[in-house]
Image (cartoon, rainbow, N blue to C red; front, top):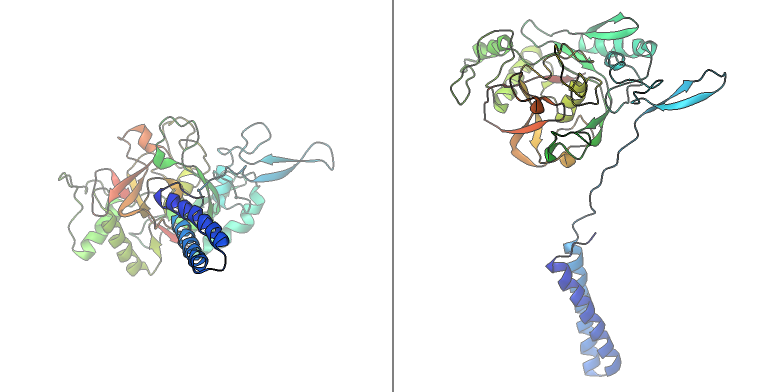
Length: 372
């Protein structure tokens, strides 16, 4: 698609000039003037073509709303089947809330936009144990659903749970009255592989073990507030560099590949099967507890710094959740979720904010992830 800018208009004028020069060359015939006009028309068309190519800005980006995964379901009549959307919450459809625990357990049919699956527990029991054993985690069956049990690599390491692959509808849904342009357009992102993520945010006790081992100052917000009270509470007043340094120390200690989750991975894990504004549905309800993937601290605790650069919209987010955003403003990073004492609009699952690389805020911490 060509933009109607000055360069494009000049190129169009050169095309018109080329036509006039050619017409003059034809009328002049085999004369010196005719040859000069012919050469001038060649030069004009070359410049016009170059101008049009230089003004091309690429095709207009567009997004499509996929209908979502479907499943084949037997009807009452023998030999008859129907195909239903797994996200359909009507009678006979797969409820995102009701099936979230099955998705968390590792159903092979977990290709759902919001984390919900219509698959059965038997499939999960065949898939999940292998992935869990690779991480050193275990799972226990309850009511035919596999609930991942958190495990840690060392006494001071964060507890980790396994999150299965699938498809994520990332961003705010149409009709969300609190949504900003930074949460749109809503996109389908592929979570191409299972990964492990912290059951909750890194705690004060876990971070202070790193502080003691590296002789670095305790975290302190720019306002002077110190965050060292309550060893089991989530650490805050740390910036992006602090989080990266902590993860580097953790990898040196455990020889594991810890990292920050990407923004898409965070939203997929935080939703835990919900495609709504909150884990609890369109309205935030208390008490929160764990989501469908076993994560706690969602809609409470602290806001969380994630991997990747800040972008003003979701257009720059890669289509594969495993890849962090590299376009946009890399001097700013992304914060997802919010603390329990912050505005409810900031605690929505699609809400996102920017933060400077070395900016430490009250109620901003982080959660770790790692590949399996």
